[in-house]
Length: 161
Image (cartoon, rainbow, N blue to C red):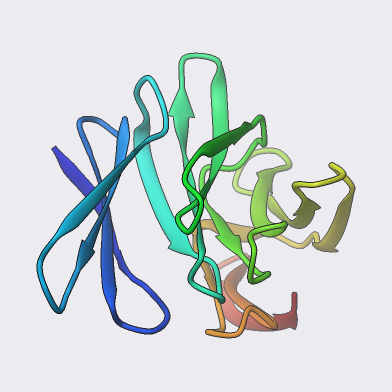
């Protein structure tokens, strides 16, 4: 099973997850060669985001213990696991030190959070009702966008990350 394809910021690589989220695969688009990085025992509903600098990748998913985030340093190898209550996260710094994610705050309500993976410090960026699967970042990581729900109306919100 291959999931979560994403292009690197420079367009040189295509990343995807295989073997039920157990491995990150990076394919060189010029030559077709691939490298694999072991990351997890198994991930359900995985997502993948290249960090703005292209040297790190953030992978999110669900394990038996709950939601997790992995930061994979593709220039050095190795994956670090973080317990973050995120079903999807985007990387907003070049080396993958900081992520932005949606944290459940009750039924159909998600807070937009920024977390430092180095220190664990968190900052709430937005706390109005947001849709869970609508989170994107600008190519440089400086802004995020998501859809905010207010009854039957939806609004696109863009914030600095």
